[in-house]
Length: 429
Image 1 (cartoon, rainbow, N blue to C red):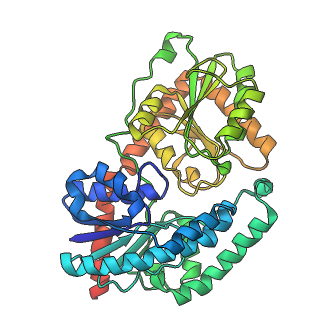
Image 2 (cartoon, rainbow, N blue to C red):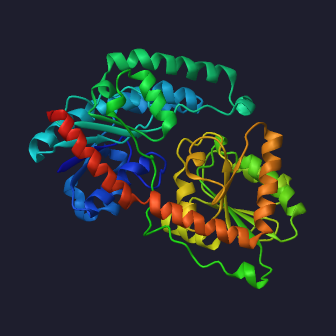
Image 3 (tube, rainbow, N blue to C red):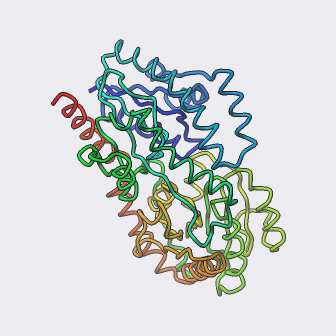
């Protein structure tokens, strides 16, 4: 079996869907599969650093002047609008070049499976089609909106634009039938499966449900957490990790943490790992709440680490006691699985990806009816886990077991190889 992975971006630093191709490339290579990865040139440095011995299996396409101009224009637009307008045009232009390179690789290397890993939107049309080898697309995940009680966080005209864009996707998929022709469509969950069934009637036999994310168990490992049982007075360490963008809900977390500090009978600290456009505003909010610390693990304080490399972030998680992700638009949530594999109980919103991974044995899922209710629920959950070391310990053990048994990238790669074989058989049937 020879596999070509295609992804617009492929980087662990960017995270999110851009990391998926990196994980698939690494795990398939470990299992002896001949695999190539075709991505954008912006991923070149990162990929060559990760896979120096595989440089002949990495291929890249460059931007055109038009893509550069569209990117500059998109920076002026709200994220959701740019995603459906300038971003979509950029991705189609990238795919035009990728399709040309992919066809050449397939001919020269005898590749017999193509796997398009990004973008993960179930409805976004693709130009990747008719390459000369069976095409697998996904896992696909997306189409999320803010919970009903949180729509005020997005401007009305932006919501209208997104709604119109999703309606237009049906027409676009008829004009660009890459997904309609694919040998296999992978859905990250039942929500996405239903979206695909509605968009592509009669496609049930081609759709397989496979969780989008996985966890690298060689990096994300549990660490002993015995101090809490010995009466140690060090703060209980809460942690958030992710891009500092508005839908991550860190403003809600900061308000809840300030309340929890006042209510908890044990000391608390909060670490925030990540960077993004909201960092300055959220640091200012922490200052106004009188909780901004100058060092990590200060009682009653929050410390902003900035962006951390994967290994450093994993080390921080091993030192933490509870992971908190109040994201309101988390389609996937790979960081939840990473926290689980590290042995942390997870507090997250019962909305989107985290609700697919968590249960009451390994975490706390919070209702998302309104901001005041969510802040109060976050507060109670943090205090409860901070004051209950045995509950944290039990949840952490359950989290590790679930992450290791269901979501390791090694296990997922074996599942994917079976899907590749099915796709090849279906193509020749």
